[in-house]
Image (cartoon, rainbow, N blue to C red; front, side):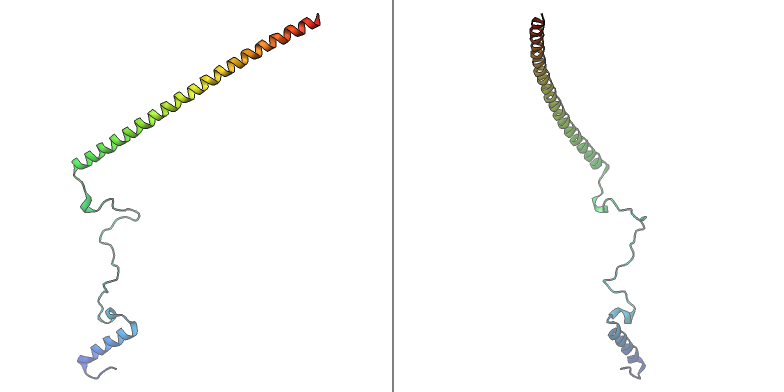
Length: 125
């Protein structure tokens, strides 16, 4: 496969390397297009860029975004506080009705106790 002529010898060697390795770039020494290179930025390990350069915002946009987020948070907080107050009122009403029922029950039991005491004391005499 190798020829004796010098000009065609290099070509034949490249063809031989390509045939053995199956890689066109191995013969020429070029870097293949699909090979992954090292990253151009040197960020410490575990650090990720927050935004691509195309999505950077002006200070005014950042301030508007912060204001919008604050207003949204306050609105959610108001809603949650309103729901909390509603549940508290419901809980208090439930406790008040339970207390009223227990007071009535206690009054009946005291009356029954007085009745039983009077019956027992009249039989003891």
